[in-house]
Image 1: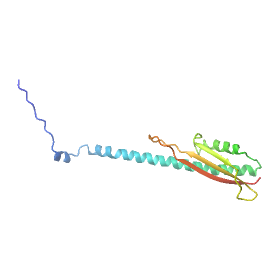
Image 2: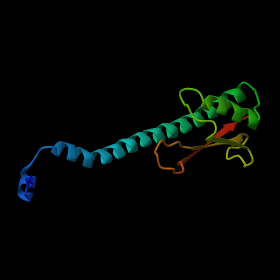
Image 3: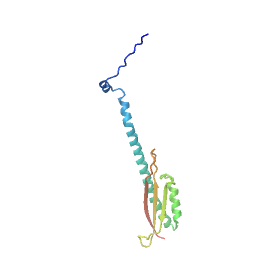
Image 4: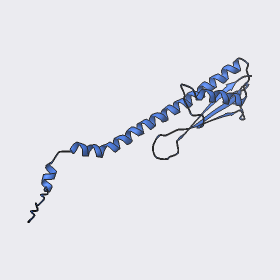
Length: 150
């Protein structure tokens, strides 16, 4: 028995260059990783901006709370102020993670306003990231002075 071996015909480079079948798949394979990286970057920036605005608003609301309580002649300790701010931080509209939030209440400095007590509220928050790369989160620090009269 004589076996006939067929010669497999390989296409020439010119024929490969003219072939457009599967071009969309190749283009998608090249562009999809960049698209997904950009999408994750936009989402990460959105999370950072939400965290920044939440920390800033929480500091302002905390300052407002302290001023109102002192106007009602309720003297608050540093721990009470810290506890109230921490309680507000985990609820809407802030939705911050209490494990990543550090609140410092400081009365040690001299007041810049005569006859008033200056209370400095400093909030530091380490942002969360959802990227698959293990990177440290950015730290947002916001400080707000409050002047109250006792």
